Amino acid sequence: MSRRASLPGASELFRITSSPALDLPPQAPPEPVEKPQPKPADNGRAEQLARSAAPHGSGRTKHDAKITVYVSGDELVAMEQARLTLRAKHDLVVDRGRLVREAVAVLLADFDQNGEESVLVQRLRVVGSDGGETEG
Image (cartoon, rainbow, N blue to C red; front, side, top):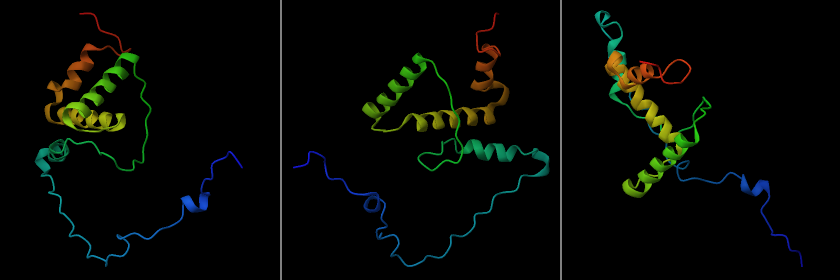
């Protein structure tokens, strides 16, 4: 008797199966949504406000761009604690990527809306170009 487990082959794992979604009749394409055109006098501010009106990250979708961000051990622990608190106290199960995307979306929306007075500008003024605290 063999001690190895019997596992399915790749052809079984990756075979095409029928899906109820594939059996549905085709639907009419949705009506295109018209974007309001910014007036020439607003210098594109309407577009900025439109972006800041929906300060949500992209959520769990397939993303076509990737960045690598290095964080300290303390920052990683704080992020994990926030993630676990979201799960334990708010019934929100999120991964670190989603947490970062939401944080970036909130920060950029605040920057678009408040500019000079935004949290981003204020924090970057405190931290020098080398990432250390500025003297003052």
